[in-house]
Image 1 (cartoon, rainbow, N blue to C red):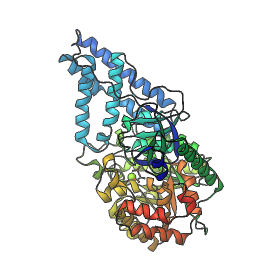
Image 2: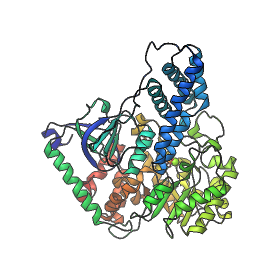
Image 3: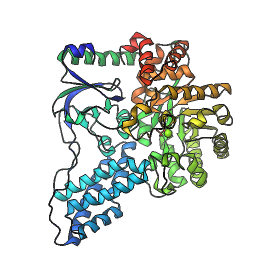
Length: 566
Ligand code: PEP
Ligand code: MG
């Protein structure tokens, strides 16, 4: 708690800021899931009851698909993927079995969902992560079969702060941006769907906020998406301070524009992370140099058949169209683990995050990679975008060589690799030899360096990119690339943290890609420091023993004007 808050008796809870900016408003608690009632009567006619259950699932699927039609790309894919769960025939069949065994409709749905959830959890990785979506579908179907209102965000008319245990992607994706001023969750992690979507939507957000769900509805709260502080019933003076800070921040951010540059003119390209056509159309007119990460798998999350070259050419052309002559870094399908694609499924694995994902999958299904590269080449020629193609999950020099050869054989001029496996990060001097660039995926790099599953919110401290070991690995990756004169960028969430951005530039990074809402603050931070100062800031971070000490030490040495805003 800061002195100002303590002086006014306000209670502050510290979570993790995942989407920048500040907000103030009354709390709207997301309605908890509807439970199946105890003592529900067995159906007189199980067959007829199954039809009711199927109708409930169908209405859930319809609702999700309807919302998908009005959502942005990333949101749209997530909603469609969740609707697919509601349509899953196996799930309906499992509920039918429970009805036949004498359970009432709501309890049959609940038992079928439990059974499925246990299977998903046993599979681990992406499937375990989908348990939240599965339970959300189950809860909506139970509400539908009982004729109750759907769980989730209630309707409200005043600009408010949404609070939940964790937001299902479907809920985050469909929030009304004009009414939701902030988001707080009790669970969730730095790279969870909530975090990525909130930043994409430009809504300040804090995850891992202690006892958030116990904050009474209507309580006025202040949300600081930078520091992670949530202040309950703050004084008028505190709120005024917050407003002033927001205004100072807006003024500071509009004072800088154009290319990212340090105060002595060192160029750092500021780029957008996107997930599809709508994201590209929104990012195109913004003040940024292009796209640093197009997550192509997001476009196909709900496809059950591999898209044809023609279909892909059409999509990529629309993504590239807002960027003629500008950089668009495309990542080839990063399927598997947290982002599986139905048409690229190689079967269950014990540890999907360590399995045949990313480029490893392309090695087994080169047809998928070749179709994608061919489509990218057509779309590049049609739009004149400066297309660069990179591979996910590269671990060795052979993989990098294989990929860059295939990229060039398809007439694409620039090939790169994501550096998100520590084994590759330590050997960039060799891994990047036949490539044009490297791009640090700090989300996975932190996961693999610290041996902490990025989907587990409770492990957020280990996944903190300020962890000195992660910074050491980044330094090694930058040093190796510099030795052979290959540019290194960052496209993980770390690139959007203004303090960490200074560290990364000091370590040798030449481009930073992030949710577009994070670009102005990073541009401002860079403009206040010379390259030599960034190098000094990086040395300060590397000298720390813990993640917290690293962040605090850097906070203590940056320019006053930046410290006043973060
Ligand atoms: C990363 O791992 O940092 C990254 C940018 O890729 P994704 O989050 O899509 O795995
Ligand atoms: Mg990754």
